[in-house]
Length: 194
Image 1 (cartoon, rainbow, N blue to C red):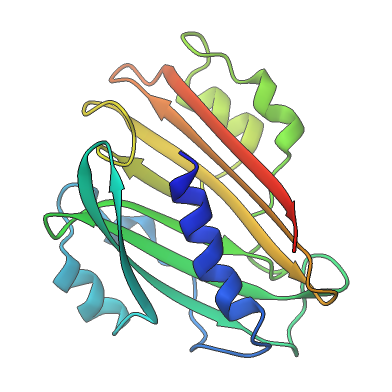
Image 2 (cartoon, rainbow, N blue to C red; image 1 turned 90 degrees about the vertical axis):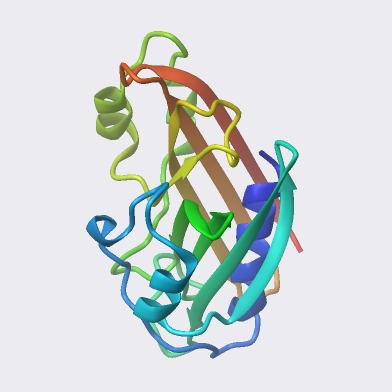
């Protein structure tokens, strides 16, 4: 999983560190995004040309990623000393949506989550409802090949913030669920630094 959060965080951080970049946008409704159905052209038609495009290899499949980001020194961040920013990344396999993730350090729509609660998620026991009660609303979703199983779906929680002193915090959680909505996998990464 380390390549997905790092990619998402790197895309977001590029814009955060510029002070003010991108066009402001709001978090898209999950009703407009259907894993395995929404196409690349539908996303671009709805959200415009992306700020960045790239590819990565995951589970031996080439994934296309596009991102949108906005940062402003004049906004209100969740935490003091942070440049507020929001980013959205969409992932495609064969031009079909297989994942998306939203990150924000703005106070109004932040995606911060309590990483201390991750250890309370139990593979084979916790349910999707348990995870939502524990962690809150996911900031994205992944399907195969972004996750290991081609029958599961993962709820994604991600948070990135860049401080004025050029340090950053990044954390990402992907919780996969089987067809019965029971947790089948938990992947968590976190880092701080420059």
